[in-house]
Every structure is written in structure tokens, then in C-alpha cells.
Length: 141
Image: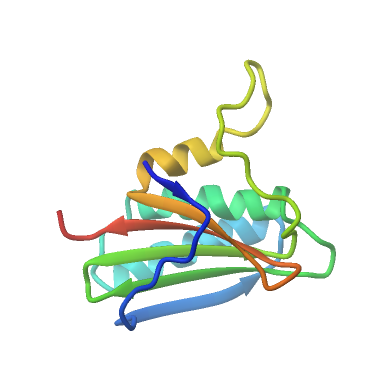
């Protein structure tokens, strides 16, 4: 598990999908369903990517929500060797905590799940007022 707050450069994508969704539980559920459909159409394994999408989309709906502003789900495949999942919201001032939440906390474990499932993950801040939380999965092991 690696957490970074930098921009990772990659080759030109071979497949990509992006959609704006409402920052609601319904929007988060739709993000998961769309990721499942697109990854399946691309012939890629859906697990653990769909679980990562579910966690990041739920975080965008709960912690990144701004009334009237959607969040963006992006799926990008580079040379059939790397899947990058990106969720962008408009609460750039609210960066996710990477540490373990206190005992008995009601929330805060989502990024621990992302960290356990992803090969790498991080946060890109900007342009204001946005932030993008991303996770990468190596498709070739």
C-alpha cells in the first residue's frame, strides 16, 4: 500500500470512461454499477476495482458533497497493464485522512480498504476547488 500526494504520469490511455454523478447514495451506487459494466465490457476483472470505486464514490457523496455540484468518476486503462480509478469532488479543502480512525469511529475506514486493495493510491489537489482521490491497480502480475 502506497499513499501519495503527487501526480503520476502514464502513457496515453488505451481505454477510458468518465461520468458526472450526483453526490448522493444513489450516485455512489451508480458509480459502482457503471464501473462493473465498463470493466466487464473491457474484459477486465471487476474485483477489487469495483470495491475501490464503491469506497471512493461513497466518500465523495458523504465528505465531498457540495449542493448543486456533481462528482466525477474516471476509469483509465494504460496499455492493458494499469487501471487508474479517479473520483473528483469539489471539496478540495477537505483532504482525506490516511491514518487509522480512532477506536469506535463511525467512519474513516474506507481509505484503509482502498489502501489494502490498491497497488497505489493518492490525492491530487486542484484546480480549485477540486480534489481527485485516485487508486491504481496493476493488471499484470
